[in-house]
Image 1 (cartoon, rainbow, N blue to C red):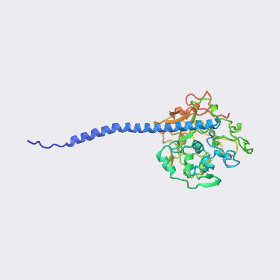
Image 2 (image 1 turned 120 degrees about the vertical axis):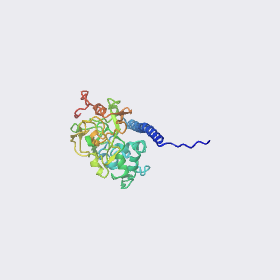
Image 3 (image 1 turned 135 degrees about the horizontal axis):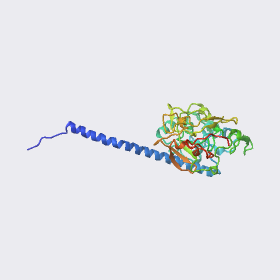
Amino acid sequence: MRLPRRGFTLIEMLVVIAVIALVISILIPGLAKARETARSMRELASISQLAKINATYSLDFKDEVIPVRIPKYWIWWNICDPAMYPPDPADPGRARISHESMRNWTWRLMGYASMPMEGTLLIDKNEIATLRARGYEGRSNYSGNLFTYPDTSFVAGAATHPAFGMNGVFVGGDTNHSAFKQYGTSKCGNNSVIPGRNPRTSGGLFYVTKTSDARRPADLITFAASRAGDVSGTSYHGNGGSDASNLNNRRDGFYKVLPPTSIPSSDPDHGSTYTMMPGWTGSSTTRWNPRVMQSGFGYLNARYFNTVAVTRFDASGVRMSIEQLRNMKYWDNYAPENTNPSTGVYTWRPR
């Protein structure tokens, strides 16, 4: 005798659906964590590669650390070193970038290494697409094979918003933070700003200019994951000096990161005096919070696992918490031994 066919009851179907939902709920967090782990590893690989490029640069340039942001006098008039101009990505075989787009370290270091921005300094696909979409519009011939770009272009955007920022106040030197104020006779025989020196009235030589001067290479930060508000269309954000905090118009990177203590701020190209400004504007916060304005953590970016990818002078890439990064021994080569043990912060003084 043929038995009647029996289908699933409503209760059985609901049980199966519940079991499937339970399995998915268990798997999804694991998949999300695996995805974040993969992205974290890619970020560390990129910043480690950047550290190696930076170390090689110093070897080739007689131990010199690449300047973070340079004075306009080095590139606009009485040029002593035409090789300083990085290749122009619009025509890398013949043309070179001049003026504001090359003042940050970004294109100068990548041009030296003949490395593409993508995968090394631009690591997020959406960021790459956004910046690339700006193209080379506004490119202008300055002189000979030198070309300039407006700050709304891809070249300027990549120069200002790489995924990693340099510890520019204390490593390499930044014209916005009282570096490169010594005037004298250049190697060309012209009156100009002299690298490797800084008058006491501008804070002295408080930043590292040679790798051999690093007292604690395993501690001293060179690069760190960064973020900022988009500064395109702001006339190069006040020559690199204005605040780039804007949570409504975000970029996944910034060319510099700042320490938790107060730091010197100066006119980038004129005068030799300085005032003090806060490094982290939210310095009382010890835990990462992406809703805090970018300047609150000195433009640092804890992209993955609430930790910041950093690299040190010894070219090692590691992850550090915001709490760890409050200790100035990781930022300043000359941090005093009596740094506040609870916060790691100290009061900056000229050298």
